[in-house]
Length: 165
Image 1 (spheres, rainbow, N blue to C red):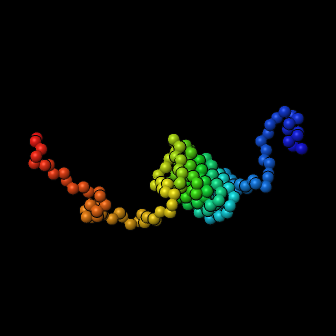
Image 2: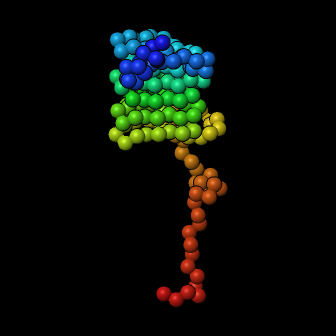
Image 3: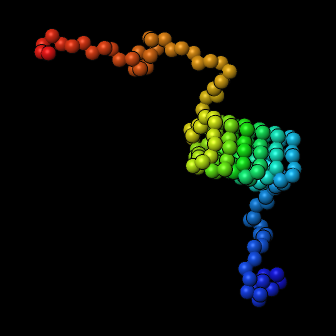
């Protein structure tokens, strides 16, 4: 009925039409502050503040332009237009928009850092599970013997006697 009235008026209006295949989208509104962990299978848009871990492995997480997350995020896809202070793990892609600010490591098979974004952290685009690194422990020096065995040190080239200067 609404669609018919809009068509008669000659206007095209934005409307939400629900079908069985549509995914639900949860929102943390602009004025909301959520303290705690979020788990589930619905897509999430954060327009306010979330302090805690977000785990939505089969869904998308969008941090809107004024949104802030202080905690780790694990989701199928992650789009940051606002600010994230924590680690992010995307099953498919993590994208930081030009307005996005991220302080934390990113791990995903695809990572997109758009021109103008602010990012401080490490990026791991390995498609398989990688070894967890203990960042509290300083890097250990590698012995010269281990470097030589790994092929990092090559023996010096000794000039031959038959060559003339």
